[in-house]
Image (cartoon, rainbow, N blue to C red):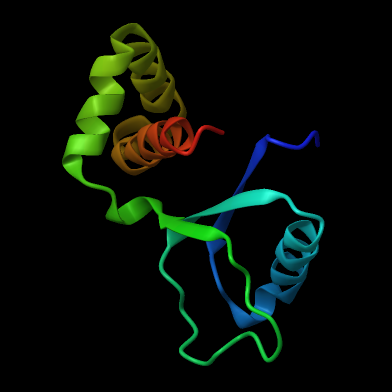
Length: 116
């Protein structure tokens, strides 16, 4: 990566004890001077502290906690892309399209907000 570029990492949960590989990768990228944002689909499930040594400095964004205003902003910023994405979600997920569609919109807007 060239300096000045930001890196986004999408994970199901962070931090999580069983995901020490991801945590170590994040720490190594930060050691190299990379600017990171971690996007999670769900809040952390582990109550214990995962890090005995240095802790990642990366910003963590929980996509399921984003406001309706952010989702609306994503929809109105690109209405035709939103309609195409909605139709693809309906075709892929049937009537269970709402969660993947909203998560995709939230991720899209969050990436834009973080300049990634």
